[in-house]
Length: 267
Length: 309
Image 1: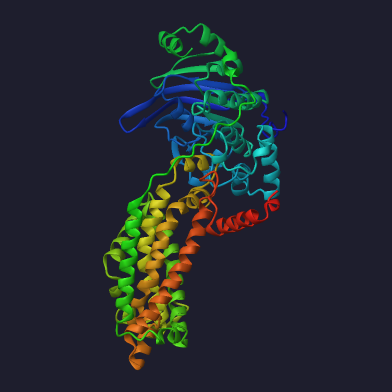
Image 2 (image 1 turned 135 degrees about the horizontal axis):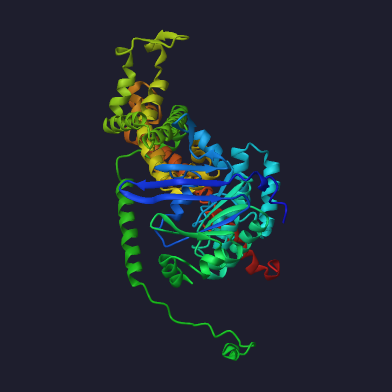
């Protein structure tokens, strides 16, 4: 249980939010996807994002590790501006290598797994620490083996992704992200591409991670997971935050009409 | 509800196998007879031709022919290697967001694909007309001294090939799912690391088959380099035929060597494709060699049934 939190333990006492968004906007050409998002995610918090498709929750998640550039506002991760450097009142774009360095500390899990198909499960997990952090193969292999054991795939180390079920692939993907020892994990609908009977095994791993104190932002349609594991929940619609609060409260007593109509469809 | 599932007795025997008379394919027999008849007719025509087949085995291993075949092989391999490396660079440049590099690459491909390779070879051969002296600062010499037949052939074939390889590599890179790049970037990899470790190895599946085609084309296109005084297989065959007067026979000798070389590389390509298919299929089919071994083992087990147990 505690093995994973090594290096990810952050002082809760500093009071600095792990993620802070101030008036974040994002447009793709004429399409205005995010229309001013303000929110804070605290260290060790499990932060759930729900909302109808097209509401901008995945886009917001991708802005956090700069896979998308924001069009306006400010976005901070662990106190640092994402993708830019501020000098006086001017913003300077970060160089490619500096952006890559920022992303090292942010793990991401995708809806479609995106495992490297030409590498075994073990090689998938080892790749980034060896390549990016210049770790020795022996150390990386040892941690990768430990992480695969941890997600219950100790006997699948030599399998290629095509030889694994969807749930197993997603668990390898989680192990791959954890191998970089991130301080923040982003989950982009991690169970949406899975057969219903495989959803549970992935949620179990995520629950485990949450208990371990990992800061997690989870875009999900799994209301049960949000209610049981989440510390806060935000309902987004049409690029704005409609309602936020404790998951149990928002899910049982939604105040806003849009939240009510959305929940009546999915619950 | 659940007991309906258990209705089938656990000890049920497997059902009797179907023994049906297979559909007869009479058309296949007719086609086979026609094909054999045509082959026999062609064979008779060639054997009655005024061609001295007896000299072919002698010349097949003549020193001139052997060194010609060797020259064809190494100029093709080196030109292809140059084409591949430069092709990857051009493909990356072409897809770059930098407008200068992508335009340069576009013009390179446009020019080298658009002009005959023979003209390019002759241009390199006569490059001293444009640059009489090669001056690299640390090295200075007459261009005619620098441009040996080998270097002329290598540059002419390799730079031409690069234009074609660039398009093949670009197609390969574009065939890799964008999610792969996103996942790599999310892990903190730079664009170069992503290309080298994640994208190119997967692109190879798409790149290898047309590259095999390119290489086999190269083996034969390399016969053009006799125009720049580089002696390869065709030139060697012509040299012999000019004294022995066995003109057609010598082209047969050269063709046998070309067939041999392309056969060897086709086998190599098969194994290369298997290597890059790793992970894309659950189980690779056995190679012909493995199938042969399995059949031999099966055959042995028929004769000695206890051997397999």
